Picture (cartoon, rainbow, N blue to C red):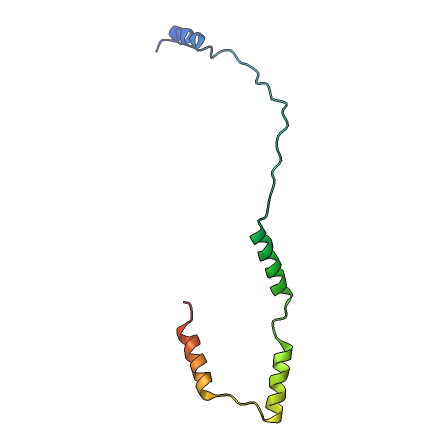
Length: 92
């Protein structure tokens, strides 16, 4: 391309003129977050679980008393069933 034709092409497309872009003065919208009712329910349930103790002291105390008095009876069959159930139903 010849240099003298470049000047003509730039005049054709008015590439040598700069224009200042005006900013619109319209107010922009702010971001907004809305949490669904299901999300709120989930937060409430999660907070309740977090507040609950890991060990149920009432159940532990009742079993301790039964063991101490000799009245705690564990069925070997039920125990074996639960062990097998847990072994085969583990998620890998």
